[in-house]
View 1: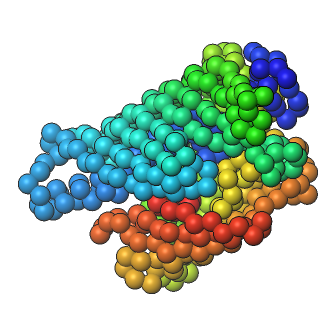
View 2: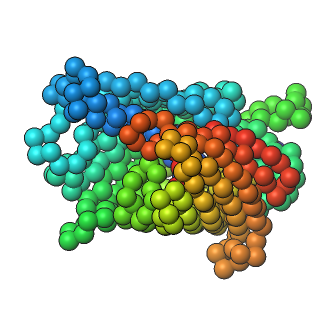
View 3: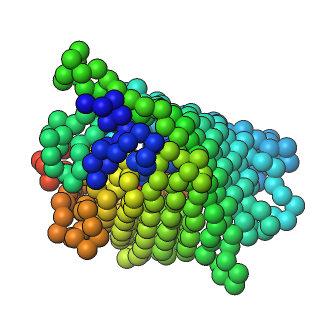
Length: 397
C-alpha cells in the first residue's frame, strides 16, 4: 500500500502525489482549510450580538465607557456537534471607534479559539470592515488548527461506512474576501475571495496497528473564487421574514499555489415567513458540487443534523432543512425541524442516490436582552435510529 494513499484518495481512485486531490465546506462542509476559516468566522459572528448589546449600553449611558477610543469584549461560547465533539469557543473582540459618517456597522478585529473533547482545536485572528458608507464589506482570517475527523468512504456505502477510519488535518490558513454592493441595489453583494493553506493530513489505522502504522503527507492548498450574495432578512440573528442567498465558486490549482487541481461550487437559499407574532416558518436548501480530482477530505457532504459531517459524501450533495420556531416567552423559543440530504456521483442522479434524514426538536434561550441570539440544546433522531444531542448557538440558517 503506497504511503500517499490517505491524501491521494479521490472518487476516481488513487491518484499520485502531486496530482490534484483536495473544506463550508468549512460548513462544516468543506475542505479542511475552509473549515478552519469558517470556525473562526462563526466565532466572530456568534460574539457579535454581545458586542452589539455592549455598544447599546454605551449609547444609552448604562456604562461609563465610550466608543471614541474603541473597546474590548470577551465572549465564551459553548459548542457541541457530532463532527468535532463538545467544547468551548472563546472570542476576544476589539470594537473600533465609530466612523464619522455613521454608515454601516463598526469595524471589528478579534482573536478566537476553539477546543473540543476530540482534541480538535482552532485558533486565529480575524477582521471585518465596512467601507465607503457600507458599499464594500471586507473579511480577513488568519489561523491554524488541528481537526480530528473520520473517513466513511464515498457514496455512503463501502467498507468504511460502519467502521470509519480516523484521520487528522493540521492546517494553517489565510483567507480574504471583499464584497461590493452591486450598483442600484440594496441587498446584492459580489466580489472575489482568496484562500491559501499549508498543513498535513494523516490517516490512522488503530484496527491494524502495529502492522499498519499511521501514514500521511504534507499538503498545500490555494484557491481563488467569486462570491455572490443577497440578504433581505429583517434580522441576522433570528430572521422572521425575508430571504438569504449565497453562491460561491472556487478554483484550486497551481495558479494559486495548490498541490491539488479541482473546483468547488456551493449554493444556499433560505426563506422565512412570520406566520404570527410567535411563530416563524423557515426553509433552507443548500448544494455543493466538486469537479476534477477532488480529494477525499474535500468531497461534498450532506449537512443533516445528527450525522457526522463526513458520513454521507460524494461528488454532489444537497440538503433541505425545514424548521418551525415558536417564541413562547420573550427569551425562550421552541424549535422543531426536519432535514433530508442526498449524495450522488452525478447531479442528474442526485434524487435517486443515497440519502439520509432526521427529525428533531430543541429548547433555545435568548442570551442577550436586546439581541435575539439563542443558545439551545437540540436533539436529532436519525434514520439510523440514533439519538444525538448537541448544543446550538444561533440558528442553523
